[in-house]
Image 1 (cartoon, helix red, strand yellow):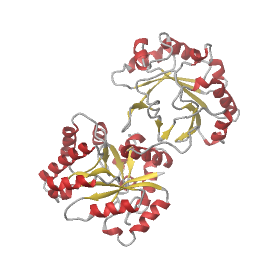
Image 2 (cartoon, one colour; image 1 turned 180 degrees about the horizontal axis):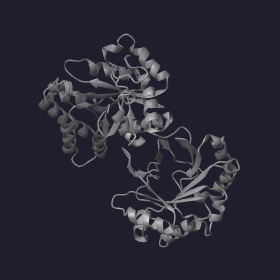
Image 3 (cartoon, helix red, strand yellow; image 1 turned 30 degrees about the vertical axis):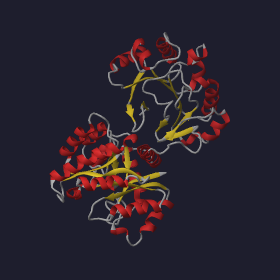
Image 4 (cartoon, one colour; image 1 turned 60 degrees about the vertical axis):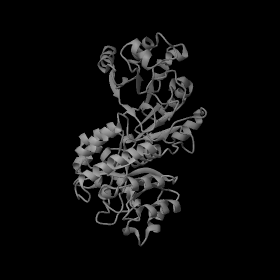
Length: 469
């Protein structure tokens, strides 16, 4: 499951074997390719790209006037392009932007065409594909002005900018797409940027036929090499190839409004070298940042459960626990709601020498009307308790617990009960805008436990949410 989010399949470099190139990509398991139509009265790119996406069901099109051709972007011609978006597989407007390196079109023409196309895309409610080379100040200024205070849906394609430019693009709502350049030995600065990013902020592309990744440098690039881009990016970011492929595919699907649901319900899921157990979607907290009820997606997995499953089903899904550095009871729900199942699974895994962690909202004692810490201590090595506030008033506003007044103190009592019985106890909070994180940190210090901040995240096309980092 992988997507090439940028390929120029209409170019002459593919004239001799275009169908074979596309067939190789499909046979290798590429889910989608975004084919770029560089619209211009002087090119046949638009017509040819639409023919390709008609012929191959896994191709989608992005249509726009490239900055090199900005001199041709008259209002009349842009109106013609609008008509092309009646095609059901024309899903992006682009690639558009600024390129001051080659100066194929005057700067004023480029800026004017870029603004107009951003406006057209907004009117059509299409995400954009943006190109930038040697034009960052002007490009970011135009994006700020044209965003009108709202997030911009789209992609900064073949990103090679600085950390500051990356943060600016992300703040505007754009995803950053990385090509084979990230695999080059000379790309140390770009690799440093990628290490600062989350997987929900990125896409991958080939930009075929250009910038073939290692180990194919100096060859014609083609979509099948997107696996090498993903592999190189995974190595730089310290994650797995599957992590990159799964998340970038999820990110692309979101942008084009395609379903992210899995073929089967996800009982367990892997992130890096850890396995997470999705016991339930029920929860006794209704946190303002949680997207469990609307879109329970985490790290590219749809964690919605239509039903709750048996202990044997989970043990079968886990398989050999020795494959994982740690197994975590987590998911979009409160695991202690299913305490008996949690304990049975946990004790089975602990007997096999597995390291176990529980991520919880700390409501376990309230849920069961008794102290459950001694039970949990029979199998857990670590417990992470999300409190997300430093006082009861803030807690009630953010967490909105089912148990109402007194829930905050109950969580504190639960944390205190875990000390000395479970080897590692961590209090966590989301870095929500305006939240007094220092107050929560002080609370953890008073309780004598560790403290960790969970990053506040906003995913394209969804409500806000958080995941552990």
